[in-house]
Amino acid sequence: GAGVSQSPSNKVTEKGKDVELRCDPISGHTALYWYRQSLGQGLEFLIYFQGNSAPDKSGLPSDRFSAERTGGSVSTLTIQRTQQEDSAVYLCASSLPPLYGYTFGSGTRLTVV
Amino acid sequence: KNEVEQSPQNLTAQEGEFITINCSYSVGISALHWLQQHPGGGIVSLFMLSSGKKKHGRLIATINIQEKHSSLHITASHPRDSAVYICAVLGGGADGLTFGKGTHLIIQP
Image 1 (cartoon, helix red, strand yellow):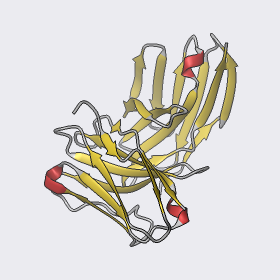
Image 2 (cartoon, one colour):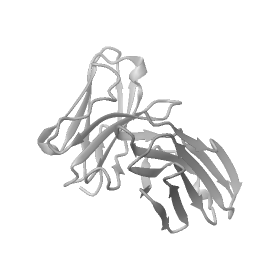
Image 3 (spheres, one colour):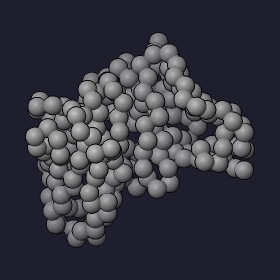
Image 4 (cartoon, helix red, strand yellow):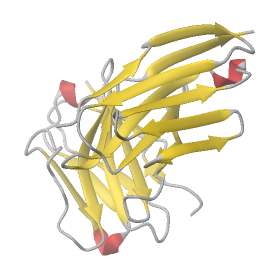
């Protein structure tokens, strides 16, 4: 597609439930990133995929968070046993190799109640 | 870990004024991004710099690698420029971007 597509755009879930967030990067972009923006806080890096290499998971805040990227394209960020502090906007971005410009998706606003 | 500092945190100016937003970082980088986030939350990448200067319309971004400093300038500012401007750096040991806290810019008519 023309841009990075994320779904759903909004998600309200009950504490303790699992959620899956989806990112469709721009076709041909080999690098894919997940970021999180919490209320009152800045953006923080979560995870990075580059081609078929093992992902850099150094930003994941806990083992409840995981992500996968199938076929080098679509990525899913999964949060298990959601907590209220997981409430945030989750942003996906993609690029050609990392030193090219980024394109951000419009984000998924997750609210854990 | 790279520390990214932006200044000012908040800036209110009148339409037509020349705007400067500054960004400094602590560790050498491979690239620096300037991002724009509008009230709806969408993020747009304005520039990616690794050296020198780039210009796009009324926006100019400069970077001084030796001083670990970058500036974003807006000439002839307009109310539609009102947004949060975020500096983010790539490198310094991290694969993902490290972000500044953003500068909230309001341009009054």
